[in-house]
Length: 126
Image 1 (cartoon, rainbow, N blue to C red):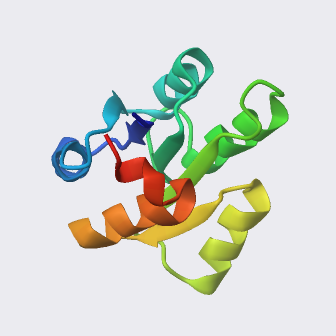
Image 2 (cartoon, rainbow, N blue to C red):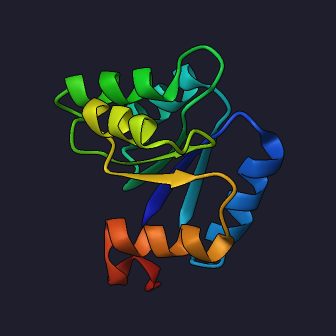
């Protein structure tokens, strides 16, 4: 079973992502701010992180940079989830080291498709 961290400061969006991922049988972890997201990744080593760009305490980009600089978390799969959808924003995320990018708003099916793209088709198998 894949372990996924949802790092999102908006409780309603975090809940929507959780409900969507619950249909795939994943183990779900949650963080409401940047420092908590960083701690969860270091402690639980999730297979995938859905990371909001704009969070309290530490931006998503700062979280990515910290994870990439740490040999224990450098290969963590990270998908940035953000309302910032310009090409320059996506380029900034890529330079920081994210694996992929989703622009808000998004459909639940798009979220599940992204899990399959990043973790592979076996991610939905129980």
